[in-house]
Image (cartoon, rainbow, N blue to C red):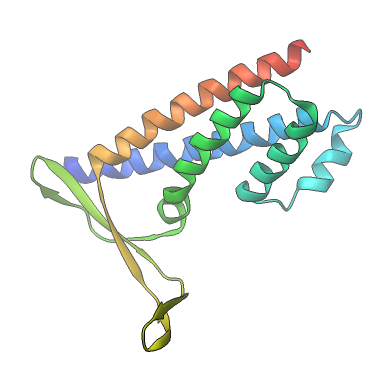
Length: 165
């Protein structure tokens, strides 16, 4: 296997691991905010949550608790921004990477049916699309890894503050 392919696959693997750490830390922050004496009860309540639902819960609970709201809101904003790429990066179908313009690129396919409506002069235009594609560069994936590292550091700081309270 060519070195550039090894590098992009290694970066995608690292990105996947970082996403998992970020999501676990988000759950820990949520559990700490709920502050139930029995963590097992809290874990049962949130066990089937996805990342979007956990973010929503943290936002709602922190409106009541006001635990470092600027820190929490900034953290959640950064996670929401990263989350846009997360599902495609984790669940997408990857094509063969190739070298291009001093970088490595790879096409990722999302196999989901998307329905959109658009108002036009002629009326409502309904569209069904499937199999969308997005091109990723290795340099962009590496920047995402750095952003997630920053998010994880911020999460660790919040968890430490929670533990101190």
